Every structure is written in C-alpha cells, then in structure tokens.
Length: 178
Image 1 (cartoon, one colour):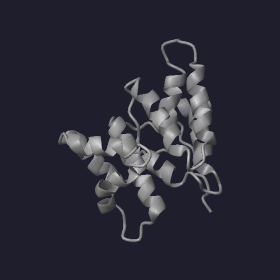
Image 2: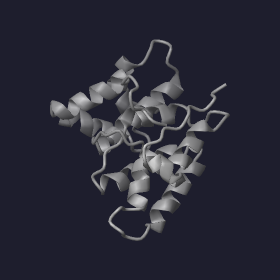
Image 3: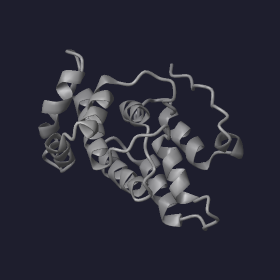
C-alpha cells in the first residue's frame, strides 16, 4: 500500500517527533515492547493516540508499529515491500539476494500471530541498507493484514515482484475493500 499523499496517523507523527527530540528512553521502551511478554509496556505510549473504542487488536497493532519504528526510525515514501525489493534487487548490478526473497515470502505467508516476528526480520533487512520506510503505510498494512480480500498481501506482492511500470512510479489503482 502506498501512503504517499495520505494524512499521517497521529501515532506516526509522535514517533517521528521522538527522533527529532531525542526521546531515547521512550524509543528504548518501545523496542523492548517487541519482546514476547513485554507488549503491554508499549501501551503507555500508544494508547493516547487510539480512540476510546479501540480494541485489543488495534492496541496490539499500534504497539507493534511503535516497536518496529523504534528499531529503525528512518522514514521515507517507500512501502516496506518496495524497500525490500530494493534490498533484494540492488540497482548496482549485483545479483538478486535470494535470502531476501525467502524472507519476503515468509512474511506474505505469515498469519496475525507470526506477523510481528516476520516484520522484525523485514525491518532489520531494510535497516541494514539505510533505506527508509513509510510508517503510515506499514501501520495500515498491519491493521488490515487479515482482511478477507487479502488486498494488503496482494499489494505487497505487486510492490515486491511487480512490473517495471511500478518501478517507474506508475500508481496502482486502490483495491476494492468491500
């Protein structure tokens, strides 16, 4: 999914401000919330940015996004799949990195329970190359990962394996989300 031109979620704006204001302690706590059994530690940070009717799923998604951001707070207009594509097929004439494609395939196959582990691996791969991530886009992807139409996974697949038209910046039409 592409977040270009979309309004930024207040949580993402706050997370980006932590970097600008050197909120190292908060970022460290958010990184810690990625450890199994420590997810509740991130609620202190994310709950003010969720509506009063947010359920556990929305809370877990926000904590996951905040923890991933704290791992690698570099922002850009690239979706995670687009960034992984650049890691997989570097432009410098290097051969494609098969291990990146395998990680991406595992991410696409991940269910909601396994998603945090696969996203941590994916973000770490992107971090190693110093590419940024569109955190608003990733937040939406996490929120709709289990949608019955599977539009998030399909959009990710198109971004990763898509045609050269996508490389040239030709936008995809938005999928139906009925």
